[in-house]
Length: 296
Ligand SMILES: [Zn+2]
View (cartoon, protein in one colour):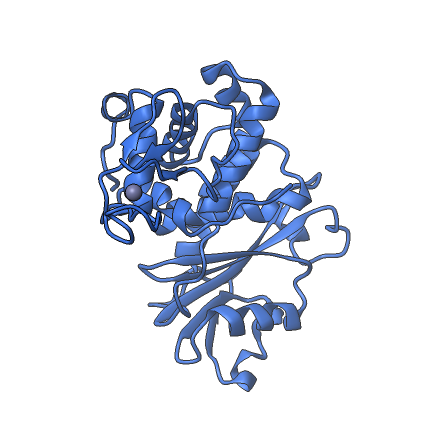
């Protein structure tokens, strides 16, 4: 299913902060870094930068320096880089992620540090969309948190203590997930417009919130779960399987997810699902280039 990047391999490859920094240097400057010192003979050319001992900095023979961590989630960190890499390793190598509590124990850092590391890493997992979903797209919502898990309450009044996550899954492809404020038909339509190609065939359950989709040009079919769960191609089992995995993780590993951070947790699950057939740790690491750090 996934790459077999073992902990042993990880520890060999990233045995200390220097090897982690070298990897970041390689990601930021895949063809080598150019010197920006006008007086240098390598000005605007690729130069042979070397690491300065005891500092997270590389230097050209002319003295011009590069700090590879600048602008990344690791900027200004006092936590060893190898710990960050390890946190990213566990985030991408476990099916359901791990809790900050567990990371705290494994690395002997404070809970606050562990929590902050995961928060930053989740920023790498919030990817920009890779186009609109086409083909067969299964659409469904799930409820997170709250006091009851009774599915009969799914669309009922009295389920307001639950948060709603909408999922749109291209069969055999990617899933897009969004924390939404309600299951009103306009809310659902807006998400479909933003994420689903107009040529797609949209499959949902019997929820009436989707019945107006054809009026907006979408092909729509539904299954009524009280009568049938599958009618030929028409079913929502892909997204339902995703939900059951997602909910086991969110309630099992994280226990309580606050409303404010739900989208970040959702992004984490979406990232793992969408890169399930790729070397996930490398993909995650590669994201450091594109993600700007939060200035807090
Ligand atoms: Zn130089």
